[in-house]
Length: 248
Image (tube, rainbow, N blue to C red; front, top):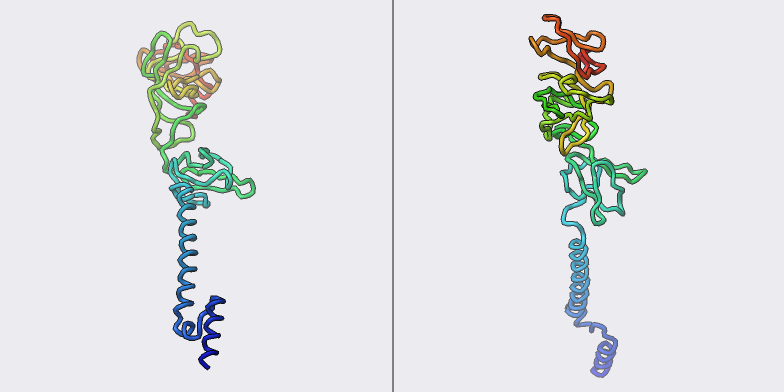
């Protein structure tokens, strides 16, 4: 009986199997599973840690309808193509405006739809309305009051603007005072944001309301000139086709 027990014990050791007593106590199996658990846990944790560190520090915001601020990470160029109000940098796509994300699944474009309460800014090509506040030899100084399509909202990057004599009209301008008068209301196109230069050469651009230089009464159009209804004075302007219509 003792010999049989020793034989079983030797076979168990040789085959790396738990003995009946060890199996009952659970020590061998516990030790083995513990080693395996620690190893897999360590590998798993290590992999997760390396994966999270290699990505962007900010969580991706490529899910449609997610609110984003300028500079927020939206996703990668492998996931999306950069759409409106986004930009690419080092393989990532970032928001260029405050708003919510919109994804075109068919074309894989991701864009940012601006929030309605985002302050509007002027851009090249915008149509603006302003008042002439000063005249120089080659410049008309204009204070911008508003822009086409922007109603009852303050423009954030508005600045004193100018109309250079070369941008008044397509024909030769002999003297700027023949084209604009102080306090005139004009419509113009933004042609240079940095220097806030305006252009009035198009037919719809130019003076939409003028005031008599003698008595300051609003003038009415009389053929290609303007006439004061009070004092009868006749003056010239670079007149917009919208003059006197109330269309601004």
